Length: 106
Length: 119
Picture 1 (cartoon, rainbow over the protein chains, first blue to last red):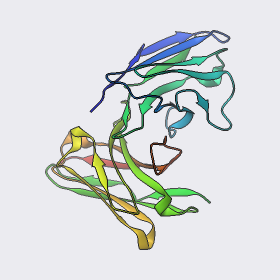
Picture 2 (cartoon, one colour):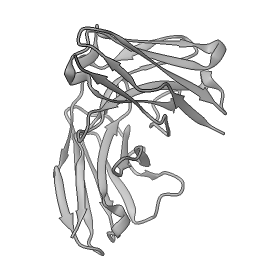
Picture 3 (tube, chains in turn blue, yellow):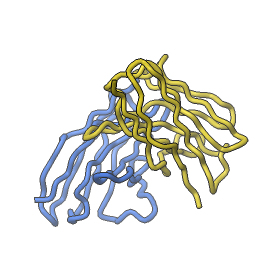
Picture 4 (cartoon, rainbow over the protein chains, first blue to last red):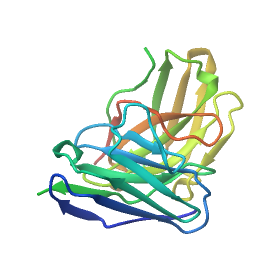
């Protein structure tokens, strides 16, 4: 199975900051990459798919980029409600999740 | 209402098997693959496998090969996940989710089923 590695594992940032999370695939996956947000005790929520397409209803401060093996999720201006764990997932063939990035608000 | 409704919590002894269900409603069952993902307390999402409700084709993550079996009953729009040889490390919340047939992200999740493995 292809491995997905996220970095950092956790980070702390202030409201208004620009935040970037990286996801690396052990082999090329074209753009079959999604990002999910999960808050404590809640279900994962799809934010981005196709590496860069924003899911309907997701705030425009979220954006994604990348192709092949290197991907990023960017939050342009961090808001208090963005505190959560973020997961990347490759969704072609046998899907795989990254280990997650826990985002804390200072 | 488009939803996936999962069966209730289970408590199993080590070595036993567990079979969970996931009932789809509000959409055409055969148009979406059903996936299973689990999450231990305080841990990340762990992918288990998927089933195509139309064909019955399945594929499993390497970590679960030989221990998980996915099935479905199209007459009642329900998918099942059976996990055998349970250990305490299988204690987790198990989620079903769906994606449109063909590589697609997971856009709908069941509410989750807690499986506790304890003697």
